Amino acid sequence: MSSLYRTSKAKHPAARPVTTNTELNLNLPSTTGQSSAGLTAAGVFVVSGFIIFVIGLLDTLIFGTHTWLTTIAFVVGNIFVATRTSTRSPWAAWTAPVITLFIMLVITTPLGDNQLGGTLITILLGTLLGLSDRTWFIVIVTATCWVVSRRNEVREKSRQRQLARTRRN
Image 1 (spheres, one colour):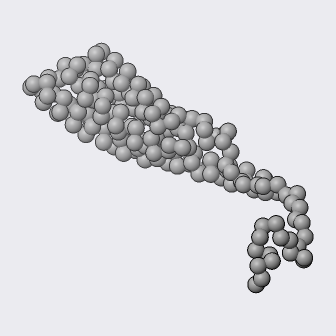
Image 2 (tube, helix red, strand yellow; image 1 turned 180 degrees about the horizontal axis):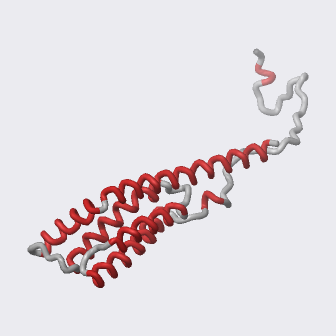
């Protein structure tokens, strides 16, 4: 190879100029739409915790213990929050129920009528009894919230694929 064509200014005799009129199509997911709508992970924990805490506190102060009112608020509140969760943080929908119920029991158990000894023993035993009383509700609500959040995530991915197909055509 000769040194004639090694410089940047030299032109090859068979070279032709290239013109491009095509648009660059990256098929990026939509930044505005369903994926940005909904509660973030922090929002899921705050809303779920607020619902459970307020009802649990009222239940403890009125009846002296956690009754079915707390359990119903736990079930309905967490399924409602799971339907409103953003597809960017679906894990929060099924982790929030157990964590917020645990925190609510730790805070409100000493306020009830059931004093099982000292404050520390009351908190420990009251929390364990509160969780064990609602074991099946916890399992069912966690599974339901997982299914709901997974369903929302699959729906969003399907919407993004459909959007990408329409952009290609």
